[in-house]
Image 1 (cartoon, rainbow, N blue to C red):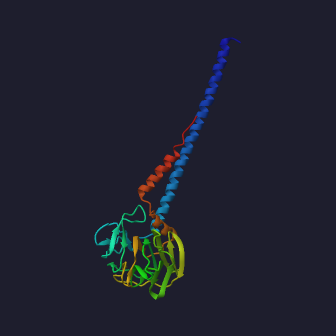
Image 2 (image 1 turned 135 degrees about the horizontal axis):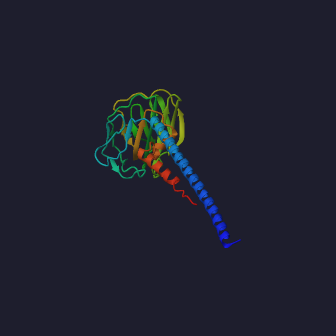
Image 3 (image 1 turned 135 degrees about the vertical axis):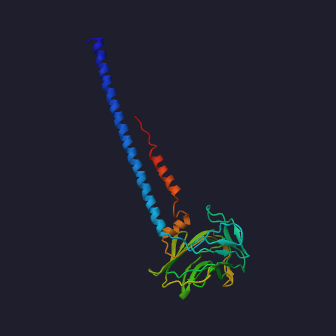
Length: 287
């Protein structure tokens, strides 16, 4: 066989090898593109599911009746951002403070001595269901009824370090050792479901105690009083981010309010989608 013939056969082999390599390269590229399309679709589906969950959750948690965030930082009152409107006047011995439970909050209210009433100028409707949540911290043990808020139909106390909710008709529920002095901030929640006949107390998102309650909580006029002196003693401690609803919050919703992620903002959802897309598309093609 001549050198020319050998050269021709070698060129043919090289050509076949190049074609095979090119075909493998094209197959890999097509497979990569297909996987990227599938991953992108998956990201869109995940985002849609999360959006749907957000819409459902937003529909379940309505506007609060009372929303006191204490973010003003100065002045003689705090505005009720809830649907009832109005404001709560700050008593002479109640102060704005930067001692707060979490980074999303800047100010809270602190009561440190006796004779400091803080009166709200809005009324509560009759309610078959009720929920409220708040951050609280006690720094004094009086041994009596220290009032976080009081009213004609529903009241909240620190009774010798126990959290106690009372309503008309002899209804009450108590969480023992809820306000341990020096224990730092805790997140508290209360729900009343009249159809189930159950009242529930939460601490830091967990169910702590339940009691049998029945009937409607009656309406009250100009009823909301924080750090009240109505039963001689105000609550000695801090309160922040108090929300009241005329509906039954689930445990998940109580936890969501505690974590401040109740309803993700649209911008957060966009960032989520972009982040998922970027993560999935970082997979590089290799020949």
